[in-house]
Length: 65
Image (cartoon, rainbow, N blue to C red; front, side, top):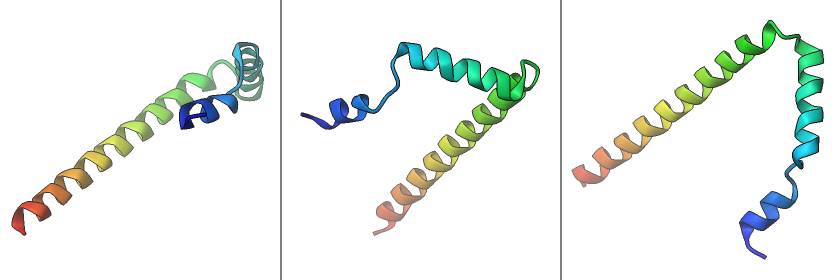
């Protein structure tokens, strides 16, 4: 069994995602969800930016050697 199959075994099924979505909707309300998604998107964008900068810094250090 490869790593992907092991990872997928722990993932919720389609019906579970619906239940999770309803629970989130009930917890935060319809008006708060777009704000949460905007924050999540901004966090992901910042993470990708930091990762890209780190990779570029490592490449520059390797070039100097």
